[in-house]
Image (cartoon, rainbow, N blue to C red):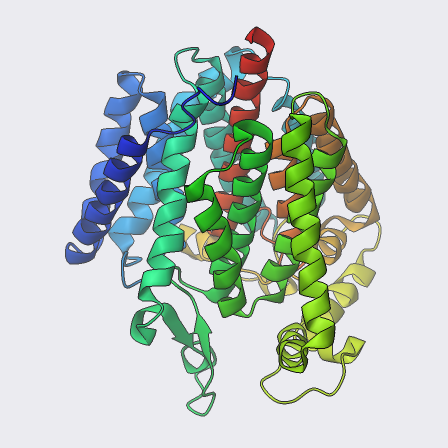
Length: 471
């Protein structure tokens, strides 16, 4: 039944890719002023009930937040337009969120609101209640927007897997192919440390591709790789040239970013998909399952052998893991954790202040008793957090940590039980990525893109389950 199905529209894929290039050019030469056109266009699409087009606009809007300034300048017009677009969609989709029958594969994500309710109470006694409340409101707005879009897609019986998959592949192509094409041009694809640290002697560059940071490009490539692999294994179930090429290019880009978080998330996410495929016998053809698992184990075996037998590969792997630019004789805990030690120690110190209840949602001690003169001061209140484990302990204490851990376990368990294998793989990888940097509630950056991919992965799961039921 899989060999005669059309899993994505090649003509629509090509048209969508060139349309994205056109939009980027228009935004570049208009200094992002043209981005404001998306707001009335989205309202028109909503009135016309063009759900796939609305999904595509939301995806482009979210992706634009992590694109390089070379392509989309983060001007005031852009920032206001992007916030208005998300706010408008969340308001328009709120009735659907409350009224439409929720999909079984998605409903488990609503357990997150128990954690948010707890954090709302705790934040009133935390470092900065006003900033915490506003950040929670912004997160809930974007969450409702994405959830509402996915609900619309699931409940629209005229929309197929191909309709969902094609726009996603457009943006995957844009990120992957675009980052590969700009790699020979360091002025576009690399971010020098002195721009971050204001040090003229830093002398080290970070590969960013078409994104604004290597720590954005690397994890995005990791979760996109997991999406491509899971979609290929569980939905398409046959070899596809486009998927194979993208699956080869993604780890190459991850390596160029020198992001250990991304590489670790990539490897663990791919193993998670392989493990599910090995034990999933209901929907996957046995011959296809064996070939996929055998290929993964063969690649992994050859990689391990190469590291042990080829000194140059072993040396590069050691430098990559240690995140060092000079020779490292051996890997130690100190060499691996050097870049994270200060942030982790700070999180533990803050947690000890209120070990049971925590210090508040998405704030740091820097914002305690800070005078707020405008809404801009509340919106532009960035915080740098460590891994999700330390960050949740710091913000919610032991109680918040237990609630959040239950949320994670319930989600992964229910998704697997309900055959939402793509969504489960993406959500699991999302959690692994947050072991490097806490972005789960950072919807104005890469975190928003991860959430959107999880929701769209669940939509494809639901459409596939319906298709398997009828066939």
